[in-house]
Amino acid sequence: MSKEKSKEKEELQILGQNLNTILIQKQSFQSQLLEIDNALKELEDAKDDCYKIVGNIMIKSDKSNLVKDLKAKKELVELRVKTVEKQEEKLQEKFHEKQKEVIKNLK
Image 1 (cartoon, rainbow, N blue to C red):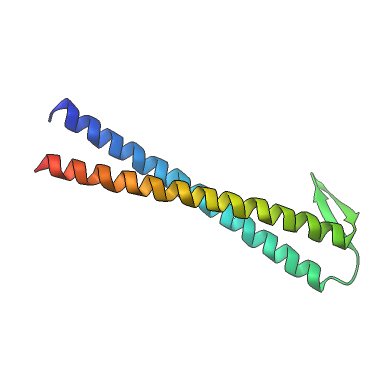
Image 2 (cartoon, rainbow, N blue to C red):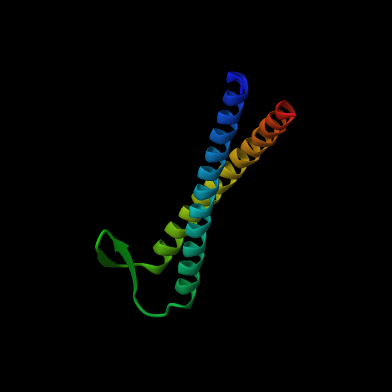
């Protein structure tokens, strides 16, 4: 196998690893969104005192402030998801192009 073919295979492997890393980040952000949505739902139903976790302790907090903070955090995480999705699309395109190259050169 020539050095060029070996290099192309290595590049394909690196693109695959980068794509996997992006997918893990995306999954993490989606998990955060789910947690935020669940917390907002719980706050909607909350009638009594509300608490915020800070470090290892829970601090009593105003419900409206908690909702405001969670909504801001949700917007930020949604933005991160969109950014990661764009990166994912670009990496998938590069991966498929490189994959076609490698297959073509193996023939």
